[in-house]
Length: 152
Image: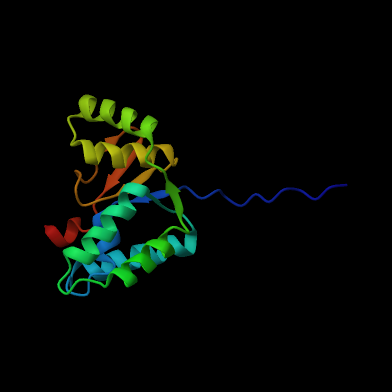
């Protein structure tokens, strides 16, 4: 007789927007950095973290050009490589086309719509972002701003 399959619950992916990922590595951001770092640690442990190629490219630019002081390009490349161990949604033409429809339907910026579409394609139920309205639901995603209490 074959053993019974495990009844352990399936994990539900959580999509991380660029700013949340970047804050986890920004030592100058004393209020947001510990919050973002704790979220990232939780996602590593649960194996629920998801990003897109858009997030990884934006992350590289932010940490090498907008941090004070910026991370070295080598260090930034290393972090991109580390986060590529997560599930990474490729931004391809079908994602772009679907995002443009979301942009139009929900009056979003195209870049935010691209993030939402990538998260949707990953099967995420939660999108962590400071750039979208906290508590809003779009395309089956719950938008959460992890810094909402910091900004209040």
